[in-house]
Amino acid sequence: MVRDDGKRNFALREQEGSETSVFSGNTPRQAALKAARRIEPADSEDDADRRTLRLREKGTDKVHVYEGWAWEEEPPENSPDWLEDQDTITEANVSKQGIKHLDEE
Image (cartoon, rainbow, N blue to C red):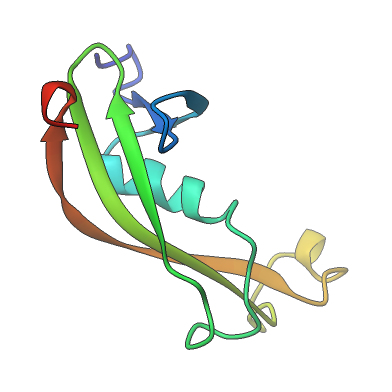
């Protein structure tokens, strides 16, 4: 279901089928990136553990499946003032694995 502001809600599904968090975004990838930033970050992107993220689009039976990983790095030099106090920031990336439907899980 699309909200008035154009964003959609996606529920993070755990292995046992429970939904623990809701992320919003204009696209499923945007919501998956938000979910991936909650993964325990590694010291570098190469060392990051990859985890499967299943996001059910609210109001549908579609489950978007992503592989996600997170890592820490120094903030860029052109970062905003409020970020200057941070020694590291969490970066994340995702790779789409496909779409499933609830009856297929």
